[in-house]
Image 1 (spheres, helix red, strand yellow):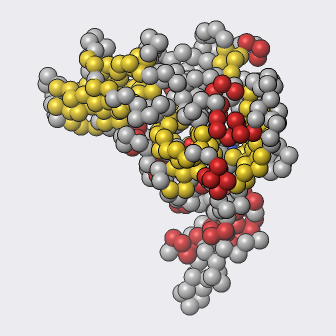
Image 2 (cartoon, protein in one colour; image 1 turned 180 degrees about the horizontal axis):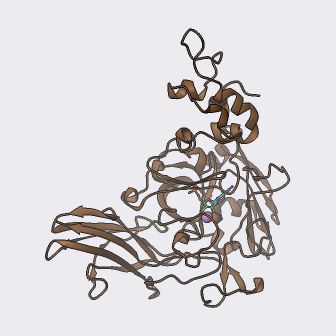
Image 3 (cartoon, protein in one colour; image 1 turned 90 degrees about the horizontal axis):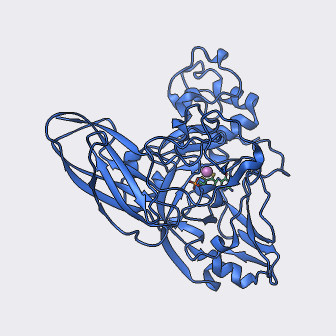
Amino acid sequence: MPRNPRRTQGLHAFFAAYPDEAHRQFFKPGLNRRGFFAGAGLATVSGLLGLTIPYYAHMPRGLVPAAFADEDLLVGKDGLVLLNDRPINAETPAHLLDDAVTPTSRHFIRNNGIPPEEAGAGNWTLRVDGLVANPMTLTISDLQQEFEVVTMALTVECGGNGRAFFNPPARGNQWTLGAVACSAWTGVRLADVLRKAAPAPGIVYTAHYGADTHLSGDPDRLPISRGVPIAKALTDNVLVAFAMNGSSLHRQNGAPLRLVVPGWPGSCSQKWLTRIELRDQVHDGPKMTGTSYRVPRYPVAPGDEVPKEDFEIIERMPVKSLVTFPKHDSHAGRSVEVRGHAWSGDRLVETVDLSVDFGASWMPVELDPPINPGAWQNWRRTVEFPEAGYYEVWARATDSAGDMQPFGIDWNPKGYLNNSMHRVALRVT
Ligand SMILES: Nc1nc2c(c(=O)[nH]1)N[C@H]1C(S)=C(S)[C@@H](COP(=O)(O)O)O[C@H]1N2
Ligand SMILES: [Mo]
């Protein structure tokens, strides 16, 4: 039993593992006879709040006090909205994604299980095995010494980003817009690592394994283990990354080692990466099969039941854009620089158009090329509003294959791939 749970394992994990003890330690009456906080040096809730808790006896066992609900979980994050605390899932409001390259503090968190304890990079190893002539176990310094180290800004978007807008609703984290980011990742190319392992002929798929644990606590169950077709794995912007925006990875974003597979569902980018296995068949790990990260092969109507065998694995993420300025539902003058980002799986975005008259007319923006392949594209345009009033700014990207963002959602049962247009309300004064 840790004596100071806030230092050793975090409030939430402590409450989950030892609800009675957490309750006893945290909710005992705060002040002793002499007016000091009681608790023999333990951080009681009363002590932390500087207040007694008159109704402490009624606090349900195992419930983390709301005053601390976000604080402990989102250390090192800035302005993220917590969607779930077990596992931790938090998204970034669109206006906080305004930077060309996403700072670590604004990179969303999508966990399927419980991250490993804070791990030093020193002892971490990556095993590369399966159907290879030269299986390897590499430390992070082996990776740094044996392969070229590169830094690239790479877009990672959760397959379920936008799920909150599905109607009928789809189960799962109710992401709105902010399960996407484009941080600068430093690491080595997965292709270089795999080539050194000498894949056997007939390899078709990778399988990725991480050190996080299943919510059930069962050590034999993995929370998630996904893979990608070998051709994707050999693309030269797929990285085994040990740094993010010039520092070590954030603990919740996979420290000390993760994959970054830009343009494909974020689930391909295994965090806390410990092993990559090469296979002569499609991977069948947790969240690869059934309906996970899959969509029907054909368009379906909301509410349709779709047989499991008609689902296919999501590969590239669809064309999409985000307005990061102005902030949704804000006030502005008559002249506004509207800006944001656009991306489309492994394709280029060719145009982004804006409408401020509910789609009656569209105007092109100034659109940058990606700063490297796999980065989102930044765009901007100054918009003049004819008079004061309520407006909506709509943004619509079109990619190199002619795919354009839809106005409405292409509905699917699990709520993936919502790339409908972003609409921002604006009060022009
Ligand atoms: N080991 C492990 N890797 C993982 C996950 C996870 O739960 N465990 N979640 C995946 C999913 S679904 C997404 S969208 C991305 C999110 O990366 P982030 O949390 O760094 O934003 O990580 C992926 N990698
Ligand atoms: Mo995801």
